[in-house]
Image 1 (cartoon, rainbow, N blue to C red):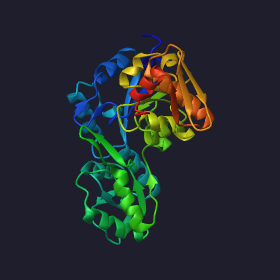
Image 2 (tube, rainbow, N blue to C red):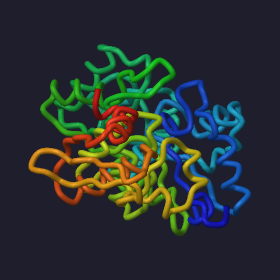
Image 3 (cartoon, one colour):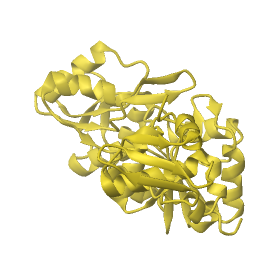
Length: 328
């Protein structure tokens, strides 16, 4: 276990939704692996774009799933948004909040005054996810933003992974205001680097399921990342990832942290030959059967050549590509 990823870094920065749990359902293996990381002396941090819960509530939720967590280990996009506001506004300034009560608490904690309705005294709008956000909330924010108020979004995640599947995230609500105001918000959470840098301790590894937030945030902060396939992104989207959204390591789920850097590294792997043709990556098995090793090889070749289509050569290659959902 000494060469395992969970012990190879000073700190592990875990995304939550889609990486550690789906709503109220823990992802199998997460409590055990996180416990093993702690036992190895690795600092554990939980970095989430979810702005609907306070750090203490997030820690309580994790503890209820059998995952040891302290509020001080939780870093949320609502905290990052409040920090952005405090850096740009005078103490006591009014901020119109579109989001959960916990977002109001974070705004108040940095010396600003949260309100729910527009007035001439409102200097900024802060927007975070809440299942209770409706048209009336967006209307108040629209008036303020159109009137020149500073606009800060905790995150722009289009979707939110849950046990029921992908549901609308804060980014979907942000898109509605973007359309109504022709303005762009300042984004406080992932993929912006400050949230990651604040959470990191020493040499850090980011663990997440989303390329456009978790992995892009790691890249922006200059940190290594392990991408897992338990949330939003798929083998097809990994192969087509742009440079700013490319992880260093790949695993099926969080238990991949038990493997070594060499095993999980996105690079050509023994047992598979992938050759870039004019419009597809031709896949041949040289004795390999591990679909994840094939995916690591495919990603490395696609990122190097720009070719993202796939074509199997032989039944073994066809079976592996089918397992990855890359062919029917």
